[in-house]
Length: 81
Image (cartoon, rainbow, N blue to C red; front, side, top):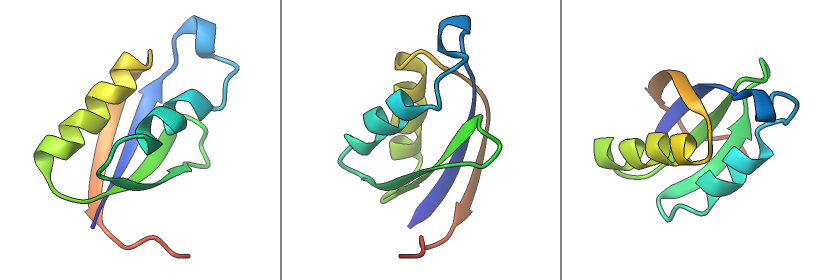
């Protein structure tokens, strides 16, 4: 299972949000199993199945939700329950 940390820059109209809209949009993707907020407040951790194409869908979803991506980090982990 891949773990992607997507760090975003919020547009001015979303500066005071806590990325809830982004997390909700990502949770709707079939290949995403979990979304969590990164403690720095400017990103989300996303656990998903499959590969690069699915990661690109995650990135595109973030952009379509109104956020620009500042960086993406990828690792392979299993979320703790």
